[in-house]
Amino acid sequence: MTLALDPTAQDLLFREARTANTFSAEPVTDEQMQAVYDLVKYAPTAFNQSPLRVVLVRSEEARERLVGHMAEGNQAKTRTAPLVAILATDNEFHEELPTLFPHFPQAKDVFFAERPVREQSAQLNGALQAAYFILGLRAAGLAAGPMTGLDFAGVQKEFLDDDHTPLMVVNIGKPGENAWYPRSPRLSYEQVVTTV
Amino acid sequence: MTLALDPTAQDLLFREARTANTFSAEPVTDEQMQAVYDLVKYAPTAFNQSPLRVVLVRSEEARERLVGHMAEGNQAKTRTAPLVAILATDNEFHEELPTLFPHFPQAKDVFFAERPVREQSAQLNGALQAAYFILGLRAAGLAAGPMTGLDFAGVQKEFLDDDHTPLMVVNIGKPGENAWYPRSPRLSYEQVVTTV
Image 1 (tube, rainbow over the protein chains, first blue to last red):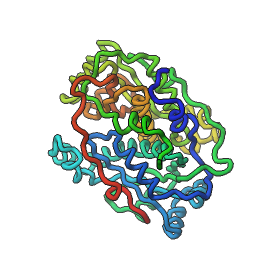
Image 2: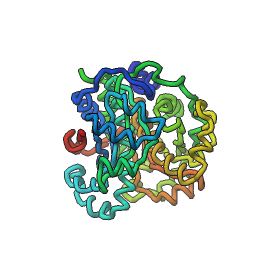
Image 3: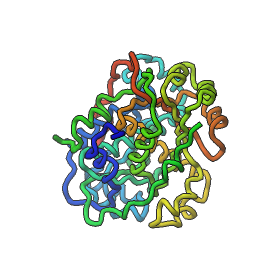
Image 4: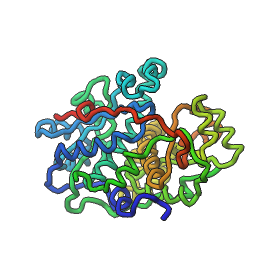
C-alpha cells in the first residue's frame, strides 16, 4: 500500500466520485455545507489568504436569474440541482491578512498593496480552494457538477460586486438517473511527469 | 456524522496535515509519486482537459538551478526537501482533447482554437489539479510545501518552454523538526458563505 489514505476514502473522493449531470430530489442542507466548509477551510493557500467566497443560490427567484447566465448546455442541470453555489474570489482578501497570517501581519501592505497583484493571487488561491471545496462535497457524500460555461460578467453583475470575481458555478446534490458519461481516459504518468 | 469521509481520512487530508517548512531525510520515491498521480488524475477539470504538468527536480544540479529562482525565504527549504516538484500548465492541452473528451472531440477546435482562451482555461484548471495534487501527497502520508514566492519567468525559461506556464513549486517529504508554525485562524462560515 503506497498510499496512507484507505481505499474506501480514495474511492469516495477520487475513483468512484464523478461529475454529476443529473441529481436526485434529496435536499442539500446548510448543515452539510457548514460541515464541508469546516473541513476544507484548513487546506493551504498562500499566506493563508483564503480568498474563496461562496454564494448559495437557494431561492427560486435567484435560481432563475442564475440560469439566465448559464450556457445553454448547462441550464437544465443548473435549474434542477438541489443546490447551486457560485464560487468567487474576494480581491480585497488582504484586509483579513493581519488576522489570517499573524506571523507576518505586514504582508497586507508589503505584498498585497496593489490590486492587480491581489487579483492574480486570489485567482490562483481561489482556484485551489474551489478544488478543495469540490473534494469536500464528495467527502460529504455529495456529487459536484462544476461549470465554467457561463457569462462571467453577467454573474458578477447579478450576484457579486466589483471586488468579487466569479470562478465557477457548482451544482450540488445526490446523483440522479444517468448522472454521468462513461469515465473518459486520463493522461498517463509518463505524459504528465518528467524528471530533471 | 454529516460527512461520509471517515474522521481518520479527514485528519490525514485536512485537519492534521500542515504545510511543512522543514523535512526529514527520508526519500520520496517515484513509486510514491506514481501512486499520487494515479489517484488524483481522476478529479475533474473542464472538458477533462487535464492541463497540469509536473517536473520532478531530482538531480543536484537541477536543484541548485531552481533554488536560484526562489525567493530568499524559500531557498533553504527548497534546497533541503527530499523532493521538489515544479507544477505547470500545458497551454497546448487542446491537442489531447480528442482523446481526453471523446464525447465531443470537436471541443479542441470549437472552444480552444485561440491561445489566450487556452491559457486562461489552463490556468484555472491547472490550479484545480495543483490542489488535487497537494491533497494527493497528503493521501500518501507526505507533507507538501507549496510556494509561489519565486521568479516565474526564470523558472519557465530554465525548466519549461513557451507552451508551459509555471503555477507553483512544491516541496515534498516527511515533516522534519519544527516543521510548521501554530495553525493560523480560518475565516468563519458566515464570513465566507452567503445565501440568496
